[in-house]
Image 1 (tube, rainbow, N blue to C red):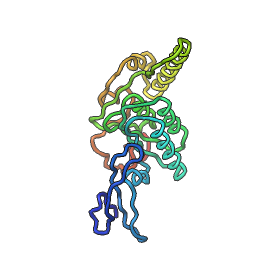
Image 2: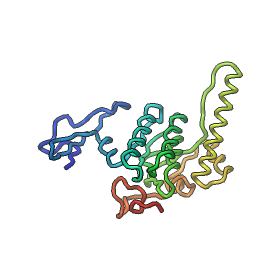
Image 3: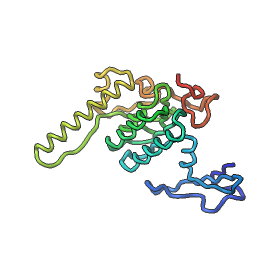
Image 4: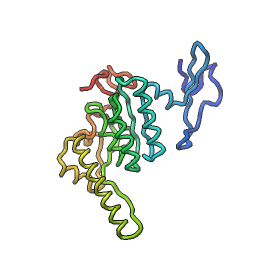
Length: 232
């Protein structure tokens, strides 16, 4: 039995813990087993169902946690899909690339689901999910744009950093072409400035494959393929 907020008579007191990254209060799940009570923060409990969350700014600390979770789930079962829920305004390109490359590296298929928003690096990770298993909820907002960065120092250093930003932009454009099926010119046009897309528009653009208002009848929690666990 699972008791999310500790309403069960056998649940322990103090049903919240703090997220080590954000400091936010996180509900604790208490399970009754034959060996007694076991408690988990809600995200750890959902991780057991192969559900991973990418929330908030994409930065090195958060990326390390996501990479570790993906590698752990692969070691647990290399053939069972992983569901990645994304609600992020974006962040550091290198941190996002660490998550992206791990998604492609591991054996399990990674379904991506946008709840809230997927902007900048968040939209890039959304598009990088398993084809046929990239989902947006109806009121999700997706935003794409080119990478940005500041440069200080001597003129030669600024020139080097500018070239690096252009190289990263080209690499991301090429990957968006791969994931969306759009032409390079269309990707470059969309990425030139902030381009906001509603869920249906993101589906037409090729960032997601489906827009779901409710979970399909044949889908269990942790299976976000939309086809009972089999990719379309």
